[in-house]
Image (tube, rainbow, N blue to C red; front, side, top):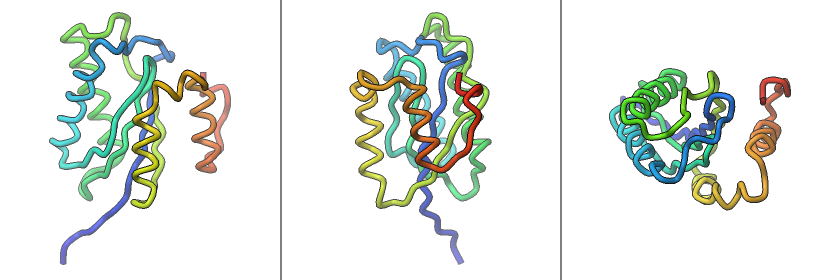
Length: 148
């Protein structure tokens, strides 16, 4: 018997100390590099986008991949790439943690549009307010002091 899964993860993580260092100039290159990591893990990327201080990734994980390992590979690999290629002045690292929200396949198109419009979205709302809303909508209890 084969293994069948259909779990979509909406993954969010920010730069260390929420520094605004992921400039638009090299962002597409960063996204292509991360997409390569995702493909090498046999996972499927539906959409990725972000702003100067955080990223959103909408992805399906291969059944053999652990979520924590997946995110660690993305963050470690992209950090190494950023530092070796000197792409983002002032980038030191990604934040220590992350958030990952599961969704059904029926939510896919809505989430793709949400992630696609991140730059416009953040003209009206800060990352912290967005993050707080995502956590609340998912029913996740959190301590405010860890948001900053």
